[in-house]
Length: 362
Image (cartoon, rainbow, N blue to C red; front, side, top):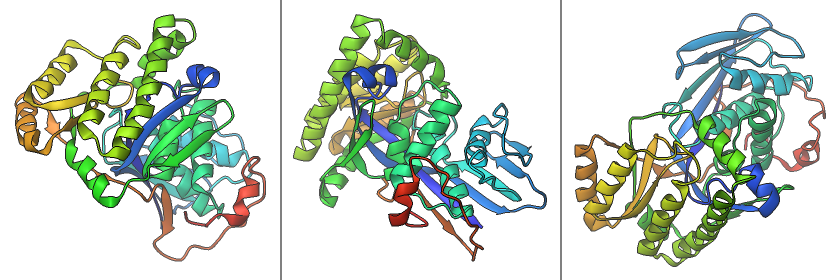
């Protein structure tokens, strides 16, 4: 059996500036952290020449026939697209069963679709003995979601999941730069003790919100100005985190959320605004909806001496505390029993030059 996992992420600031409509023109910046919970993919042998995919999250099982040109369509278009990426390069992973499971429901705002893409890429790459670096896993996952599936998303989620850790990500037309945050373990623990992640119990499809934002960022001056300021706030968040200024960090979260609410319709709602006010009245420094908005998870920055009060108030309002921890491992795949290596051809344009120094499992 081959097992792969890819962590989810919480984005502190700069979300939206990674979308190509903005980043290609002005450059983007996101400060984020990879977290456990994660997305999981496992592979076991299966009779036949095709690929069977079972998703626990959607309670669906499909079979992808053996062919070089794999059709990408619903249901389960994401794993279909990953298989298609490998198949067109002569690496169709025939005779396997892939099982998918996420620790959060789809539409959580924690980057689960991108993390699942990274996990499936990792699992199949391990199966066909294609060594991947963390950057290669992220770039392949971006190509699959953005280019093959035409999803209106940026690149922050794939890189946060593939690399793990707390990072500053900068985006341009040419590349994504990943700069780890130089925080000590005690400083990270203090940050963790100031953060609350709570579920709204509302899932949403981020595509509609992101499509509106993508369109507006190319033509709407107010949206572009908001994104400029969000990028500035991301840079300031990095400084406050390195200084250990958590009240200052919380204040930046608050300003960031006020700006984000105006990026597109559907980012917030009366219900979401009410929950946010409940947290602030309880003593939170600031917070934001994770991901594109509209539901999913709230992230709050709260002093430890007010933490219990804020949790009680949010639970009384119908929200659920969701435990997490920072993840520094990033995406990984491993075999739980010996696996016969399959030869691979140097057909992965843009990645082959990195395989010589890459580990087969990390």
